[in-house]
Image (cartoon, rainbow, N blue to C red; front, side):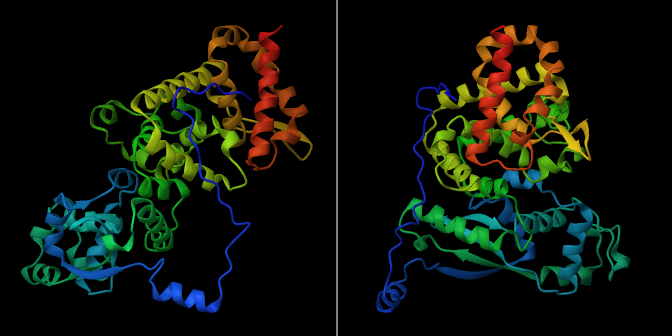
Length: 402
């Protein structure tokens, strides 16, 4: 596969090399520990609940709006948190990172902070309380005086990773990633793309999020499309928020995979997760606005091409179960990854290919049957993806070259 990259698109990715690990003696290990190498410097703080509104609205506290948009707690869950404060149930601390002196990034605890802030602003009524059923239906301002005073006396604790933990921005990002993966949102397992979004903000990350709402992409992955309200306000409806691809940012990861696999030759001896991590970090750092605009156009043109050619079945495979063949009626990454690369490389031949649409679709079942071994399972390593690209490229080109 030979992708023609845009000027300044190619990135040089770091490679993990654990082959020649440095062996230290016990004395050297003890000295490393005494010097404080790879040691997190923290302090603790407590915030009265009635100060959280100012905290959330302050420029001194940086919240991740995309995480908030996709992981909005429902009213029941927010109400349960407030009930826990009423009962003085211990609440896990939030984690902050000091980006610069007295400016903090919320690493973990965003939903708790948002729920508390919204409660004090009377933006929801309590519901589904188990121990304090008498308070169901009431907002903060409507609570009995003693209950309000009791809540106001409560605190939420924080653990702050201080700026002096890291000696450079690179080290800071590495340590943030280390800590974030370990705290992992209070024990609730996050997907890889959610962690990338939290740790690696930047132009490329924003682009993947924006493109994941492309209407053709949504149709192909059966994700609810943006409506007029979302297009004008940026706020998705509840149906979108509850969608599995949207909720855990799998949609954004699919877009990232498309861009990363344009440079699949750089994937050397590491997991796909590490490859995508490094590509996103480097892309955020290196891609100019011109490169990002070119990538945006390429993705939009390619996904529209896929829809026009195959309609909603672009990423559906024919499967064999108990000696019976059927069209597996859901999109798969095994087909998405290679097909998107093949179509992107054939954008100049789009009209020739679309003329052959019915013939191409008509031959798919036999193609999937004869190449079944190459597309079965869930293996998406570099060799498998590259092989599938070549197989699909041959199939599409057979119609162009007739």
